[in-house]
Image (cartoon, rainbow, N blue to C red; front, side):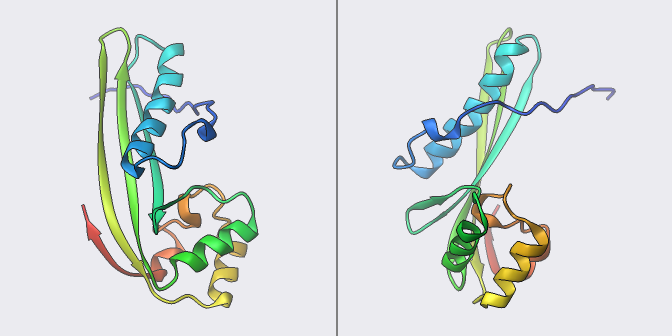
Length: 149
């Protein structure tokens, strides 16, 4: 196809979106905020952005700030079912394109030991991952079941 693309990190403050709203709406607002930030600086380009959150017991688990937070999140997910919500947003200001779609999966974890949690945090540094884990790495072994698209 010969498409050229560039990766640009959005410079946004995620804390401006209240966490007490519907989790799908939260995810949509976050993805839109990211593409809007980039699109303002690049109005003639199509910007594609995405965001993923983890939700359990009506609580949003964003990226952990430190080891303690990561441990708390993984203990919460241990032996429980949680939602993983991903929103993809497209925007082109000059063509007035502003679309998004989302995907929801229900993920259940096995019971995790403190040793497993500590090993994961120390070796995989999940500080850039919602809910403190990446299913594509070692944490995939924590997964008992996945339902969704």
